[in-house]
Image 1 (cartoon, rainbow over the protein chains, first blue to last red):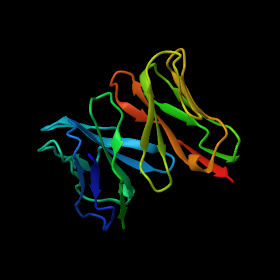
Image 2: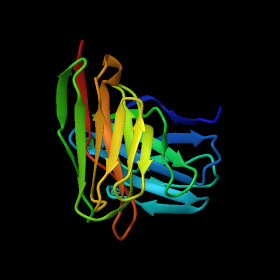
Image 3: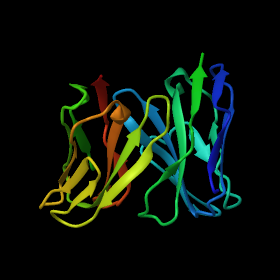
Length: 112
Length: 111
């Protein structure tokens, strides 16, 4: 069965370090998204991609970057981790731009 | 920019009672999606509404899209402990047509 996999599931890092969260999907979806989830804020869009070599900023993109070199992967990089980036991060993909999202299991990131 | 408000933030019910969560937007929506997230889990898609006034049912769950396409509701009849989780609406509309999630309603069901 097709799936979307995030790694690691849990990560603890120090302030100022660069961190990369992996997202790999086997749905062959062109559309991929990164969200962060915090209490009281729901899910907020960080970055998204509509295809290889395409990346776009979401509503909370500062301090984050993504790259899309193939269809399957959209890694999320925190250039210099800050305590405010402690959160649960979800990757998602969709068949079409308006289609429902398939979410990964999430990565819980703690920045100390 | 587009905002999506969801109420209530939290609802505690006795098993067998009904439950409703409401989603309101400041702008007209092209469509709205509903997701359920179990504790410790990830959001799972439930349904999408597109048409004005649309009503869809999934067993004990009833989803409605408002006539003006600015609001939506999810109603659960006779809740069960398996309904526990956070219910999110996700609305698409406005100039960017991006999918914006509501803040979610956490449902607790007491047996």
